[in-house]
Amino acid sequence: MDIKTVGDVVTALVGAYATALEYYTGWRQRKWQENRYTRATRGNVTNSGFCAASISLRVAAAKIREAFDGGVDILGNDFAIGDRACRETLQANFERLQERIDVLQSAVNADDAPLELAELIRVSEAVRIECLAALSKQYQRVAVGRLVPRELPGSRQRSWLDVSGIAETPATTPEEEETEKEDDDDDDDEDGNSDDDDDAQTVHRRASSSKSPYQSEPPSPPPTPKMIPDGHLQSTRTSTTSTSGLGPRGGPKNSIFSAFCPEAMKYQVNLQKSIPPKGRRCRCGYDWNGRQTQDRAALMVKEGFQITPRFLGKSHCEDGRFGCVVCTSTGKTKTYENVEDLRAHLDASHTKWQLLHDRDMAGHWET
Image 1 (spheres, rainbow, N blue to C red):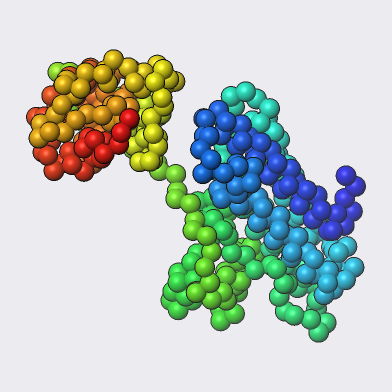
Image 2 (cartoon, rainbow, N blue to C red; image 1 turned 135 degrees about the vertical axis):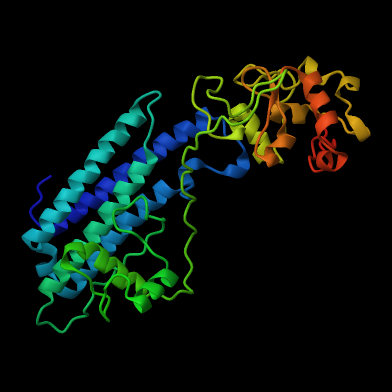
């Protein structure tokens, strides 16, 4: 592509974002199919954009195009052609984004390649912020001596994501920015201007602080939890603890839920999800309606409660054991060799009030 003007670079940037979104959508659809997410209520993945990566890619392209078009509408060809400083900044960010797209394409083409979503979002947000800052500064230079608005329309930066740990420029809430302005924590002046070495942050703060605190936007996704070393739980005569050194596949554990099979976790999270019909097995080999679910008398617990096939399904582990989902609220759980050991634990360790809170234990679902 022959890039000679700022307009050429903006076109290339918008196209790069569109390509990245296409690759990411393809990768996400493939993973969706591999994980067998077939419920109709989930909708078509290709039309679903409510995730951090797709939102960032869409918003970034739209914001850059909006800011550029706003400058052209006001200043005409002088802004479209631009100057060397703006062009070089946009070009550098285009190359930075293109490198991440190449990595994304490799992950899409590979059968089982990991995709660093956090890095993709970080680069997308950082490129957007720097490009909007470059366009805003070019607007200030070209607009000198002209009767035009002081700020470039569309350059106000307010991220849809919590980019404090993702993008290079921290995003703050309106309440935080009001506090910063009153306490002068960042040494900003009355107009919101800061040092020239951090112009991108200056544009972001000045723009977002003028937004009304009552304007709502989609909530930011929760941050990825950090791995916490554990291994403080004791093992029992019939079980190993869910937080001992290594999991069934040899990987480190960082949650009490790591004892359970990933497929079992779906039934713990989605209370309306029914277990598969007879004859179906989990990917780990567990039979959802196997022999362990047939002996109703052996599944009877105290106070008239009964262990249902769904309760066993959401309690099974990849190594053939069973974990106690009733114990998870205490922060620790153990695994048991068979259904009899699990039933003995439920009888000995849990009251009827605890069992009553588990709808599967109470037998509310028919299987």
